[in-house]
Length: 131
Image 1: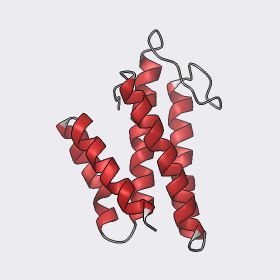
Image 2: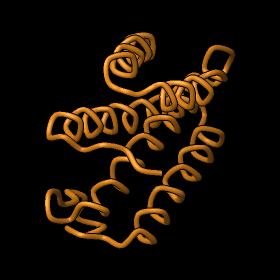
Image 3: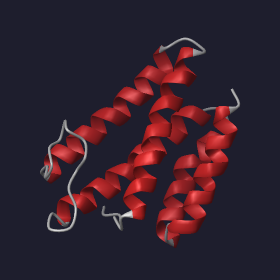
Image 4: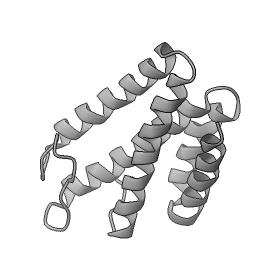
């Protein structure tokens, strides 16, 4: 699918323009398997981890930001956020492994696109990362 290379280029550009050195190294380590075989799963997990970090930042700054995911509520607890994202990552890996082609790629690409939009939106309003 042509969406994957465009996503990788867009995501790499975003990482280069916004993240600090530590987060770049972490993102590259998470993206390393993408260079081999698991492009979709690695990109999906990396985007989830970045959104997770931003959501943790939102929890720590409730006076400035609120969560837009209605499943978690406006001001979720850190436990709720950690549980939510760990479940999403497990689900992504399982679905990416279980679904037959081309549905595995489609599932992961749709999730990754929505995560990249959320990450970009958060960055534009000044949300940082916290781990």
